[in-house]
Image 1: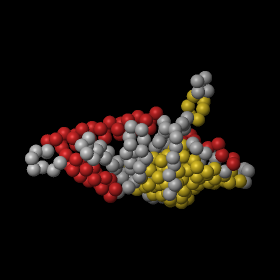
Image 2: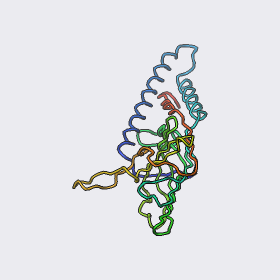
Image 3: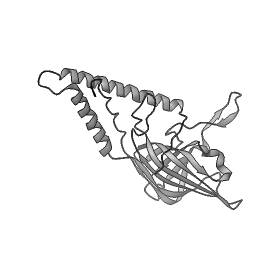
Image 4: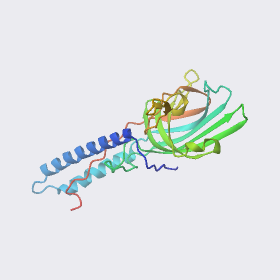
Amino acid sequence: MSVAVTTTRTKALGALAAAAALMATAGGCAGSSASAATSAPGSAPASSNAKATATAVATAVAHAPKAAVSGSARIAYVYSPDDDIRFTFDVEAAPFSRPLPGAPQGLPTDARGTVRISHHVTAQDRTVTSEAAVDCLVTGDRAASFTAVVTRADPEVADTVGRRRGFSVYDGGSPEHPDRVGFSWGVANMDTDGNGQPVEGRVGTCMAPAPFAPVSSGDLTVHAAELPPIPAAPSPEAGR
């Protein structure tokens, strides 16, 4: 799977990175206090305790169930009822895999994978396609929201390369409750410029509208998982 590497980060991502760094720092302080309390004669060195704790957390994260979204589907989009619009999702969580300033371990919502989009415009009898690399995923029960940065696009939509797009999926699981898909450029994500004129807004990681478009054919699956714990920060004594 491809992994997006972007040079721009939104304020929302910066805030989440700061929160992650704060949580990691708090964990490190707690770990240091615990190490100091157990550094009596005959106990294990503080650095050994810190390393053991970090290893245990890393192991737990590595073996915890991973969130994922998969499948291909054609949607019914009310504003293009005659067009054939299809999405293929191959998305999985990869917690703490994208280091950031202030959050060197990455974020719990880090993800990887690929999104493929195909839009056949019936009125012009042509198909436009693009692909995007996933960078964030969060799930809950039968729903998921995730984002991906466009890496390849046909000439008609070449200006989308490098942009982050938001997606959501609802795994209905039955004909009475069909799967649904949302995409950030479909009905939402409007902003205004300095003159109050409407412009397309920037998409932050994991930001997407509700899954507004029902699936007319195909199948999408959401494997939900709880967010993993923030890994413990290394003790100041570690490595000495």
